[in-house]
Amino acid sequence: MTSHAPEDIVRRATAAFNAGRREEARKLCEQGLAGTPGEPMMSHLLAAVLLALGEVEAARAHVEASLVKRPDNAAARLLAARLARMAGDSDRALSHLDRAIAIAPQREAFVEKARTLDQAGLRPQARQAWSAILDVIPDHVEAAARLGRLTWEDGEIALAARLLERATQTEAPASVWFDLGLARQDLRDYAGAAVAYRKSLELKGDLAEAAFNLGVVLQETGLLDEAMRAYAQAYRLRPASFGNIAMALTSASHGKLWLNEAALRRALEG
Image (cartoon, rainbow, N blue to C red):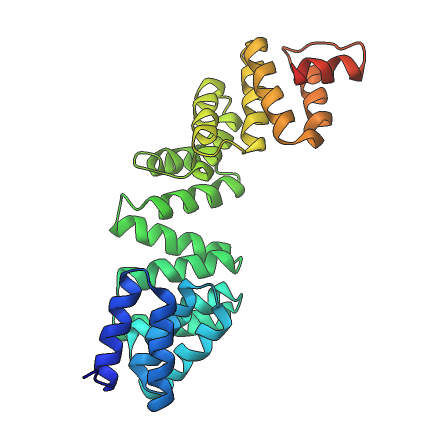
């Protein structure tokens, strides 16, 4: 006989969710809440299921309902903060995070706070938060990557390059390698920038900006044939980049002159 006790329904729904049966988990939670409205464990779990299904606003409503009954549940506060950040409600997210950290100062809460400050455009606070995480967790890729990007945007190029190199010591996404390419390019380390841009393209082959910038740094080192192949890739990925490619080819120290636009387009099209 199937038990309808909230704890049993939560166990069954959790098992279904962990097995990838998200709709089944959702139905179990909804059925459980129909029998015990506002039950905090079930509301919390349903919020997590709805988040996985991409239903952010509905998830927010359920986790907030859970917090009405269990306001000092740190895990629910953290989930509520993440959902608020995803909905663009930074003030509410930070309020939840401050409460969660006061209840149980855990790594995930500090990382989520750094993300929230970053997303809200609170640059000094975000830099401080990411830096504090790196002090405690030196190999934290996201912290090194975001701090590197922020310092690059603030004009601290050498520091940005060191941070981004640190971020790429372990597995890092294409965006981090692209940012490292930008920093190295600004430092006139064109060979190092080319390595970074190639890696970003290896990870994300449709990154037109990386292909274009690869062309620029190869051109700066006098490798015009390789630069043209990179520009051709950028042009295939984003035809609207033609104007930038034409300007780069004619304005750099190592460039080419083209008699007309059609000739350059034919060269890029191969």
